[in-house]
Length: 252
Ligand code: PGA
Image (cartoon, rainbow, N blue to C red; front, side, top):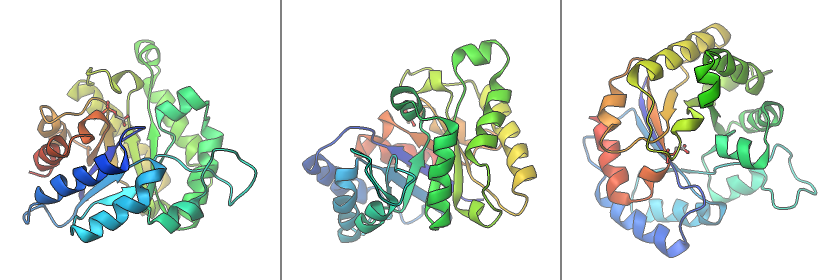
């Protein structure tokens, strides 16, 4: 299995700031990054086309993706975006079911499942986010919650389609708070998700990413945790220098 580092810019950055980021990040790309490493950056819709061209111009091996998409091909869904529109801009993947989408926009597992089906049926890479709340963890329900989210968001996905899946485990309470989950907890959650994935999709090696307050200070430690194939990084992906250092620590 390769190593995966994915940034999530959320609702940050203008076109000018995105240009400055790529110019700086492109300089940090090392010739000795492992050949099976994969770096993605999920940006606002308005930046996908520009970032895609900039990566080509600067010879920057970043995969540019979206942070969400609708499940329908097209339709009267004010404010939403369709997969075809993302493809036209050069998007190479989408994050689906991020906890901020679940919390602020009331996305549920059934809706996320429709999005995942749509993405995979068009051979478009989907990074599906799952995660437990502090309360669920304290009540000892975290693993059940994760299994339930996997059951529901990945219902009806075939073995072949699962080849383009990645799963991001992000404890809700660790996102944007500076409170990273302990290595033990991360390992336990990843082990449980791995065994679920192996049972359900035995033919596929599906990358499992950890997300929630990953910084350059803890990236190397997270890398050493068993069953962690990658990281999903919010705040730490906004600065080109920090994202580059973080990537280098994770790929080391
Ligand atoms: P954070 O966000 O790295 O800022 O905690 C992670 C995420 O939202 O995926």
